[in-house]
Image 1 (tube, rainbow, N blue to C red):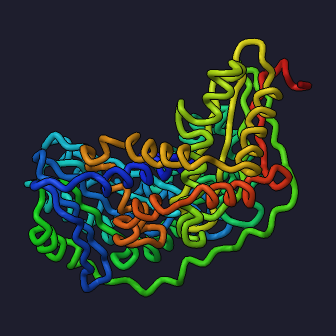
Image 2: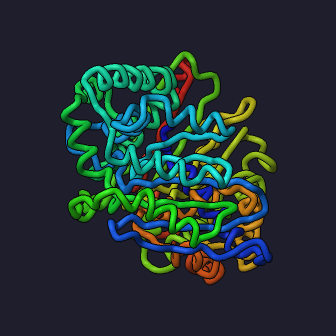
Image 3: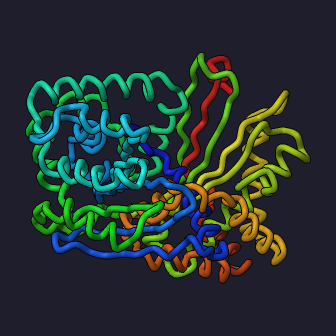
Length: 452
């Protein structure tokens, strides 16, 4: 059970999608099939017959950004509770069934969705569907179960957040970057609110959001779509549709017009670092072509060791041990664009930050060349050359898109939209959004550099 708090997975999935959709079709591959059960559950099947294995995922359209005020952490807490007993299966029975056949299973929570997944032989797929359909509505939530698992998530917060200076800073930067949207609240929750989560909170959350009409099932692997549909109807189809949910309309971020900084000094930090973030549109909120331009801007600016930041700061100037950029495109609401860096040797953090800012300003002023853009498009695609060989990558591509307002067509047409991006659109995106006096910068410093 994991958190997906920073959204780096989204950047990977977008790139993986490009290769997957652009790669030549083979005789053992078929297009994704999409169908809807009568109870509102959407099912997507991605056939891949190269290996006798299948990945099965259930994506609920509920994440930490949908939590009621004062109940931060309930989405992640409930992810844990989904592994407890149901009226039909004892606690641990599901996990043992997966382990007995040599499979694997886990789950993760993000701002916009919660997902549960199993990788098993195709012969076990219907059994997995049965387990997932069962816990969709039949969990047994007692006060003892709540108390025990609440202690688990509190300890998880202590070990993964409170004991990690970078994680603490990330939380503070998010709380500063987002002035109104719920992305400012950590996925795992604030400690003082997590401590108060109770059975009534869990039951209300379960009854509201864990319904077939609020979920998407993705099946990728050695399967036949018609057979999967029949299995889904025999298992998930028995689960009653829930009440229609209200649209996922969240508070809108106001116009940002200040530069803000967050500084954390800690004795456990040995190398200083910084990151600067801007609020930008996501694929779900952007105008046509805008998110694609931001994706390519991130690749050109700091996507890998051939990017501008790496070549200038690490290779040529030799002042940085690392520098890069990323764009979290797969979000339901507005998202963030980030640049970052850390010094090398005797270089100062301020030098690295100034050099990063200069590269950002150079693209905003002068743009990128046509050749540079074409190389970035090709690089962006080829960097995920093994995407088709990983069923979980394919399942994640479709799941994250469908859980944040997209559809199968969006997935399939994404490469064509990337190909259409022009150098002028990349320059315009940088000039419009990467403005320093509307950014939030976080500094992580060693204790002795508190005054630097």
